[in-house]
Length: 352
Ligand SMILES: NC(=O)c1ccc[n+]([C@@H]2O[C@H](COP(=O)([O-])OP(=O)(O)OC[C@H]3O[C@@H](n4cnc5c(N)ncnc54)[C@H](O)[C@@H]3O)[C@@H](O)[C@H]2O)c1
Image 1 (cartoon, rainbow, N blue to C red):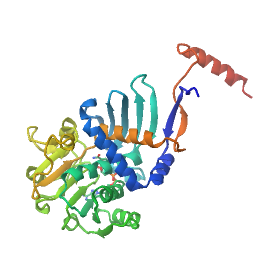
Image 2 (cartoon, rainbow, N blue to C red; image 1 turned 45 degrees about the vertical axis):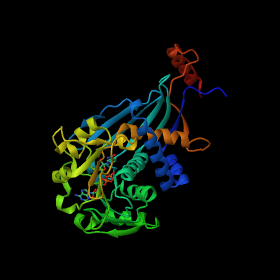
Image 3 (tube, helix red, strand yellow; image 1 turned 90 degrees about the horizontal axis):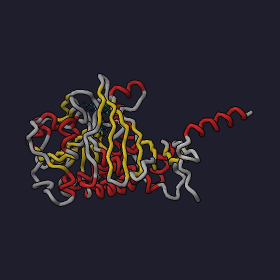
Image 4 (cartoon, rainbow, N blue to C red; image 1 turned 120 degrees about the vertical axis):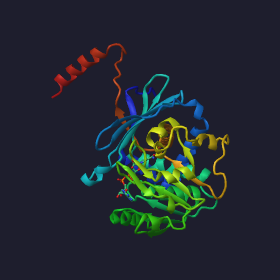
């Protein structure tokens, strides 16, 4: 069959949900983490640039491009912490994967759900290299849109068995408890961040607030804990007290972007951090010993979204989880774009 050059497969929100549910959330995160790990192992093949951010008083809109030389991908994503008060998501996203050889898109996909899954997969993958061996208990501070995905990814990739939950809005914690009720995780709602971190091996902070917040203070962090700091991802938007950073081994995705957006924006530029891909490739040590505090200063990097788009594209084979989108103009004679317009005018005029 001759491929229709105008058609691009489109994965809608409905289709993404069907795909995720067909696989199961846990299997999806495990497989997606595998794709991210594979791409981090070939880190040097990727074009890398800090994302292009357009800041406003209320939030940020970002473009996240990268290419491995065969495919090019980008994600459009926003971050507007006040949105939930108006019934909108804090984070929404969509993305494109293209063929570098001819520049034609090969996939257009919703990425709001996919971002939650890829962030959770990335967090759990980093924790596999950095968290204390045998971690079974975690805290999640911030029980919004990302929360349940984080819990299930850590269950699937690390064997986490119990999750302590805290949010300044008890309704958010109640929602997460309800959604995770059948997950097999032991859940404990907590009344403060201090209470939530009691006795856990891993702490995820995934709050949304456009300020330098102090979700965790130094006295809350015992030795040997792994911190997965997800919510601090913009200039002027952090979650950890600086003193924690000074005690921790810090691991990042792409250092030039994290210097701008991550917790380490609080530190001088010469403060040493380690890019995670080197740990994954075995070229740099991960956790030094059982006493070290490790921090994954997550901001979300384009390669992870590229991996996610690549995974979705591979997962679509022999499924009905996409529609054909008439996205690209495709005249019979490539240079006769105007003629195609005129022919369409005639067809439209002749239509009853
Ligand atoms: N690093 C990454 O790759 C990545 C990816 C996606 C989202 N994020 C970030 O993660 C954060 C959470 O995203 P979301 O979609 O879940 O947002 P959300 O708005 O759905 O949920 C955020 C939750 O944080 C809670 N919160 C705010 N301040 C708090 C505080 N001081 N203590 C405890 N809870 C508090 C809110 O009540 C809300 O329930 C955002 O800041 C977003 O930008 C990062």
